[in-house]
Structure formats: structure tokens, C-alpha cells
Length: 144
Image (cartoon, rainbow, N blue to C red; front, side):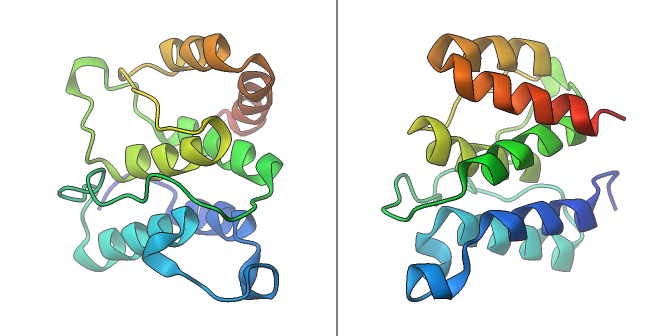
């Protein structure tokens, strides 16, 4: 299997979900957090790091309300799971899919990730400085 911290990812994603008590009912694949959880379970079951067409089937919007600090914290955690793969970055990587789902929550759309955390943080800063600062703070908190 991979070097991803699956327990950490499960824990952080769980913190992003406000549960059925807040949402009324769980929409699973129509919810950005639910979709991310489903992708995570699929990778664990299949012992894979990639989801074929994972970006294609991702919900592109959500009317749900999320805890934005938990979402920023999770992105910071996920960035520490990245391998700074640069040219070898794969859009279908589990980390990319989950991070992209969370970006839709915070920024309104998934951001292009070019395989470098530094370049990514700079791109997010150009879109929303406050969100970038929150993500960077949490990234530093989890830095290995």
C-alpha cells in the first residue's frame, strides 16, 4: 500500500462532516465530503492510491454548509501527504481528488495542482489570501 496516513485522512474528513443532525440527511455521493469518503473507502478496499475518473464524477457544487476551518485544516493535512510529484502528478490520485473536493467548498471550484505545494499555495493566495493563510497555517502545523 502507500505512504498515505489513511487514519489521519479519515479523522480529518470526519471533522469536516457536520453529520445528519445538521444536514437533515446524508447525500453521500452528492455531498463533497461524502464523495471524498467514498473515494477513500474505495482506495482502502482496493489497496490503490488512484480513482479512475475520480475527478469526473466529483460533485461540482454543494448547497450544504461546512465548517470552513475544518476544511482548511484538512487541506493543510493533505498537502503534507503530497509527495511534491511535480511532472508525475496524477489528477486521479486520492489526495488530489479529496483536496479538489475541499477546494470547491472553500474557493468555489477545484484548483489545478501542478505537483508542488509551494506553487499551489501561491496560486490559492492569488485567489483568496485569507483562505491561503488558513491552509498554510494548518500545513505548517502538520509538517513532518
